Image (cartoon, rainbow, N blue to C red):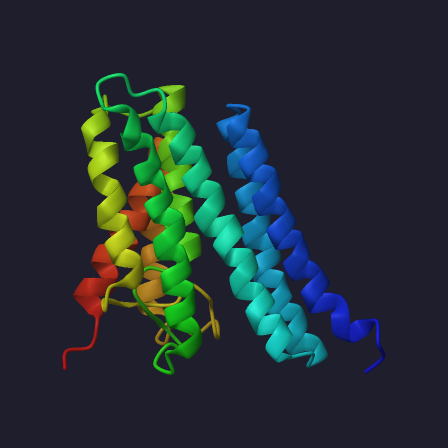
Length: 228
C-alpha cells in the first residue's frame, strides 16, 4: 500500500468532522435545514471512511480514534448546538435551560468511549448509536421549526426528551445494526421490517417521520433483543 492510499480513510473521516463544524456554524446562523444537511453529509462520510478502510485494508489505531473524535463533533456537538439555538427561543423556561442541550454532546462522548472499549459491540450495538441519536434530533428540530408536524409539540416535551435520549446513548439496551451484512431476507428480516416501516413514516410525515422512525428503532430493538 502506498503512502497516499493509507491516508484515504482518515481523510474521509476529516470530512466527517468538517461537516459537523459546518453544521454548528449553520445552527449559529439559525439555518437549521442547512445544519441538518451538513450532518447528513457527515453520516455519509462516516459510512464511507469505514468502507474505504475495509476496501483498502487501511486499518490503524489512529483511524479508530479519529473516527470517534469526528463522530463526537458531528453527531454529538453539532446537534447539541442546533438544540441549544432552539431552546434559546423558549420564553416559558428559565435562561439556563438552553444549556441542557449540551447533555447530548456529553453523553455522545460517553457513548463513543464506551463503544471503543466494549467488545460486545462488534456486530450490533449496546445503547443508541450516536448517528441515530443525531438523526432524531436534527429532523425533530426541523419539523418543529418549520411547522410541518401533524400536531403542536409542547416545548416541555422537547426539554424532557433530552435526558431520555442522553440515557439511551449509554443504556444497556441491545440495538440491531442498521448496516446490511448481506442481502439475505432471512438474516435481515428485522432490519428489512424496520426499513419498510421507516420509509412509510417518511413518506407520510417527512422530517417528523424520520424522528418517529428513530423512536420506532429503539422500541423494535428492545422488543427483538435476545432474552438472557
